[in-house]
Image (cartoon, rainbow, N blue to C red; front, side):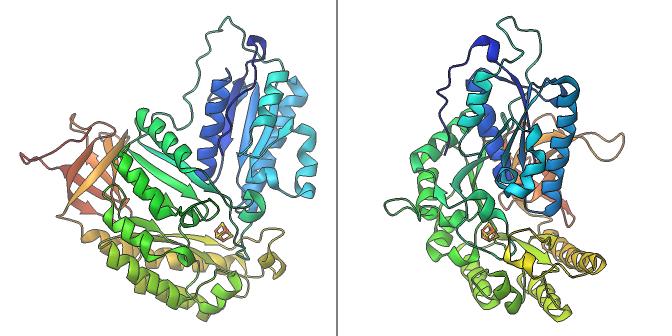
Length: 456
Ligand code: SF4
């Protein structure tokens, strides 16, 4: 829930702040919200942490080494603090909810630890501590607000997660599910649209549980309906759906609503029923397959991505082969694969992370190799087609000396590169003729026919 700023700031307590963010879209969205709140309070964002009087670390805990990165950053900032004493250090995000034993060694450097949903402890600290900015601006240029001005933006719809997948630390760090009121979400979408957003991704650990905890018949499908009716942005996506909660109402809404893109991330995690049972996912592969059939029925041509964990405790070679078979059978457009990482406090951590790192890496590469040929084949079918592309930014070419090219995305979320022709601008939605495809991206050219339409 966003926290309205009510803290009184005096000119001598205005700070330069820098937010370091790691992890998922949700953390990025939280950082943006924190930054906006601090700017409303009179503080100034800076891109260089060395110039900041307060550094806010918004850390991720999904993997063991994600937390380690955060502890490393605190250590480096602590060294600066010991040398010069000129920096306040704040910790938020999943890392802020680490166990007392994990946080204890770093507490001596931390000025405040606060949950991303409640900024008051940070606001109060900054209101009390003198900052370096006075009414006489020192010519220091504020950094851009994180996310501001982007074509594709995120809005959190539901916080937390009530499930307990045995490998996952998120419920311990993000707390119980809490849906934001519809009006608040619509307001944020409109605000981001006013700033230039053309595409909004609604976020939640289980986005399709949106509304379960609200009074009244609220669901993700009804929320999409409302957002579609408002027409603030031409494109809506949502992330991340759980197979267990994917019903035909939602699939039908996706198929029916113009602004909702034909794309879905549906993590399966494993293609083996016994592994899924031990993961505590709440479905088996038959159920998952049936959800895919239902989705493809309601949303023909939908692009589906998934997440896979390899090397789950006790995963046998045969069980891993079942995962590869499922990938070949379903033909996902994109697969995000990660090696199992034991997280202290989870059930799976007690089962031991016994697989040799080399074997995990071997399985990870096997998934990547299988997926590369599947994606290449799926994308090859798009050559010769015309796709609606939303352009995001002009990017340098990876080829030295080559001209920059425009980067955009299809409604199915595929990356498209187009040559710079002077006529494309960020935020344009154009029909693009696809001329080349690889496993990872498409290339194309604007369709020059008389009916070419530019929606701005
Ligand atoms: S659904 Fe499972 S994997 Fe996703 S956040 Fe909740 S516990 Fe973690």
